[in-house]
Image 1: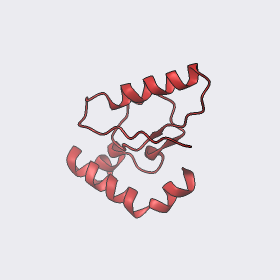
Image 2 (image 1 turned 180 degrees about the horizontal axis):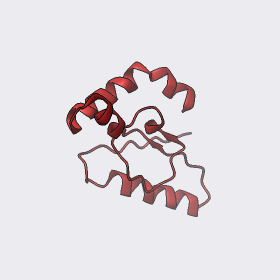
Image 3 (image 1 turned 90 degrees about the vertical axis):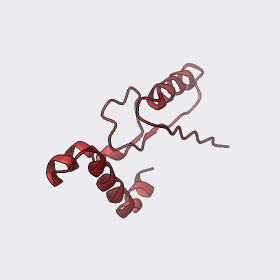
Image 4 (image 1 turned 45 degrees about the vertical axis):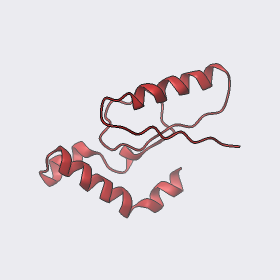
Length: 92
């Protein structure tokens, strides 16, 4: 049986810190664990993701290319993820 943990919350809430700790714990007890980064704006990932949505789209790149601010960049990036959802299902 697989367990999926999907931390959500505002920036700075500790989602990446929690994920990093869980990955370290699972490794320490020799349990299989796959971690994914689904945040195209997270440029400081302290854990080793098996899947990283930034391989598809990065908010920084979107902001520069489309001349958008941070909020517009996130919205544009999430629309890109939605438009390419089959990419995620192939990789994950």
